[in-house]
Length: 264
Length: 259
Image 1: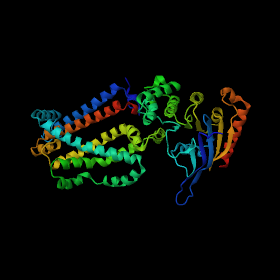
Image 2: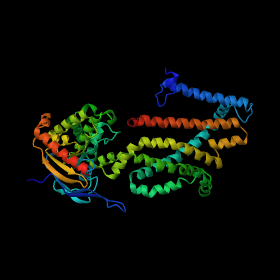
Image 3: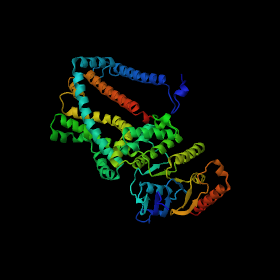
């Protein structure tokens, strides 16, 4: 096992045992700190529940069924909205990254639109699309699509010119090259983009559910606040964190096992 | 004499300049030809436009003026009649060796059986049958270039264009690939035009050498290499080989110093 000297070396490899031990230690440390602060500073006040109280609240939410329907509603919104956003991002991103004309035409406008905070569009969407699902989906799409487009464009741009030239000399036309060379080369990068911008999709979901919703994780947090159920609020925040970690792990695995040629 | 397989007439390339610069004349009236089954090299100092010339012949760049003909018919865009091998990193990294070789055959609309037969045949020729299912990243640099050559040969091009294909390889690998190229050339009776900055390589491999001068790129000399089809390391000690090499290197060096 590595000594403390090698443990703190810069850019060195860490063996798997140390890696998982440090990870677990970090999480336990965080929980211990939380527990300590809840006992000492907050002095047992309901405003700062302990980890144990939070887990108990989570159990209640789960057994009442609220947790699952809220989770389903939120995951569905993010799934649909972010799915649309990614699809648009791939189409425009690949076009911008591969064709100078598309780049010249689209990049300035998307660069501009990107700086309009999507959350500022919420009132407009409510006016245009009502208070049901459409404005929520739209908010998630608009809040992430420009980042997806511009980052996918960077991925497509990094396809080596030699690969495109080689394809031309083998008899490929432009469409074939986009579909059979640029896209396959870009998939691993696109998965990274999807993973990074997913956090922004959840951010927009919260904005949407805080304003108008009948169910959903963020809606449930507002609801718990009204009844001063801080332990529930904490439990729901943990759920957000857990969903984030799971999707991150899944997307990393898809990249690693689905595209072994792109491993570093 | 029969029509040359490949012919360039007055190929000129001027890169457009900005508002205040007149642009750069990269190639100035290049005339050259490659006959059926010939192996011809173009040598020149770096920056003489030899890669640009090959790109124009391959159809990847357009000439400002002049024509390129294959079998007497003028060509413009890229096409499978002119197979091309690049200096490096040109294999599709997500495709296995055999999928790389097969790509051009799929594009040509060959049947699955034809594709498989041709791919197997080529992999045997380049000695990589055992690596059919490997990814390019699992191969050495020399093996990758052998795959690139097999891939370029797959659609049975009229001419094989090689753009400094061994430039990025170490000396030993380079030598073995030179022998490999000669073998391929003899076995497939391909017509080959290769660009290189390595004078030894040019003399050793080809029947004729075009020496390109720099800025603008012009054909400075066209040299017949007097060794016929007999090749082997012994010719590298032949006095005629050494004289030719000195002449060409002297020429390129003078060019560089004056440029």
